[in-house]
Length: 551
Ligand SMILES: CC(=O)SCCNC(=O)CCNC(=O)[C@H](O)C(C)(C)COP(=O)(O)OP(=O)(O)OC[C@H]1O[C@@H](n2cnc3c(N)ncnc32)[C@H](O)[C@@H]1OP(=O)(O)O
Ligand SMILES: CC(=O)C(=O)O
Picture 1 (cartoon, rainbow, N blue to C red):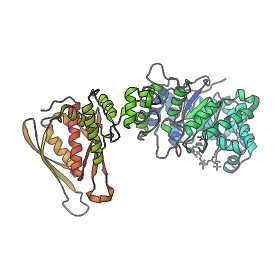
Picture 2 (cartoon, rainbow, N blue to C red; picture 1 turned 180 degrees about the vertical axis):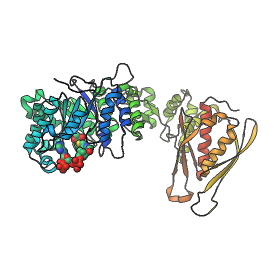
Picture 3 (cartoon, rainbow, N blue to C red; picture 1 turned 90 degrees about the vertical axis):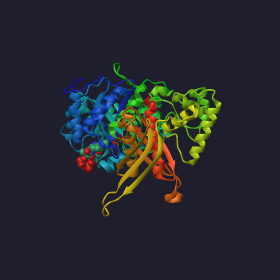
């Protein structure tokens, strides 16, 4: 087969099973996502590390950034296994394929694989394309033939296939046949509106294969599922089990509306639950399933969309255990409450401590934090009770590991790390000037550390900010390490909304020293008091974590 003008890495043909990523095309259709060319160039190698076979880079000719992406990718990307695919549509009705400017742009992209979206629901042909069924079949065949003749491998995305097949099975089948007979190597059945359920997907794929008759053996089918019914991953697996050998999806399930099938969960299910080997990670770089969690989070960094904690397999909560009964079984064997070993996908098990904890939860969390509490029933009972009492007052420890660790250290050793002793603190807010002039705050702390009594005053744009400055200023003379600590998140929650301004307040603070991030909690009837508690816990945990001895 001729391959003219192809500058990107080329794979000779489809594998027995293809994983085709469309994060950079359909994923980018997600509300709020706007990927630059540099973003796409940063994501593509991560997808290659994951081990996908294809990276759909975008729609050159329709979106200027995507045209630029393909031009730059040819020079800048060094992909080990994945092949780039350019996405576009079949020729316009009544226009020769050769003269269709968008098809020309797909050729100009020099992507070795071109994926064409084609109408396969006769209602869409008539109402959206406003042409005849016969002309649409010609649009599919002509477009595929042109691209194949120019040496491109062609995938056809049969848009609205499942709805179309149910409405007019013969026409939907004819679209598939037109693509295959013209030389498309794979026809991807799209649940474009995402409303299907797994049983229906399996049924349609099987019925189509029967309707293809002898052509079935020559036809590679794929699946492209959207998540509008919440079933995109299950629908993709149902299609694979019914015979699809090409899987499309997006990392983290990004995509139009409610997103596409999450490629990560789908491939993890296929590899770990059905025994198929579908990823081809590079031999010379860390990748594949075991790096999936890292790759998912690195891609989140580039898309600037916060990772979803409850995402299957790769989410921070995917293997986080809160209930005491779960922990007690996990202490015997983690498999009793986990569907896989989290390490298989590069994730890890975490214990959460809360009012739902039992002694086993505390023992396992303690082990995670470096405390061996096995057999220390008295300590375990005391800590469990203290946690339950504190959570009843409004504390929450599953979001404040650092405060829990300090509490545990105190119960184990009998004392709290004595880095400083607070004599008093105060904060005032002042607005000097007329309405519209920003208010400022000033705080004074008096404490004892390093054998001295220290009085320090800090200013800030609010009382907590001022207190934070004053506390650091006072302590930095004795603990210069504090200069590296930075407050990165501050959350306030009113716990008893019925009480209005005299309600109990919970403050959660996240701090970093550039290497580690830690969270602390404070609770009180007063926002500033709760904040002070979280701020002091934060300073103490940070110093203790660095191995600094009280001075
Ligand atoms: C299911 C999917 O997600 S497919 C991917 C969809 N992605 C995108 O739409 C993102 C990129 N899109 C774009 O940049 C623009 O929509 C373009 C450049 C493709 C087209 O823009 P415009 O020429 O301004 O047309 P517009 O978007 O208003 O309408 C789409 C046209 O394509 C036609 N069309 C739709 N599907 C197809 C198809 N498979 N084959 C040929 N023409 C098609 C429509 O009938 C309509 O034609 P009309 O202009 O004669 O009414
Ligand atoms: C092609 C595509 O993105 C769809 O049908 O959903």
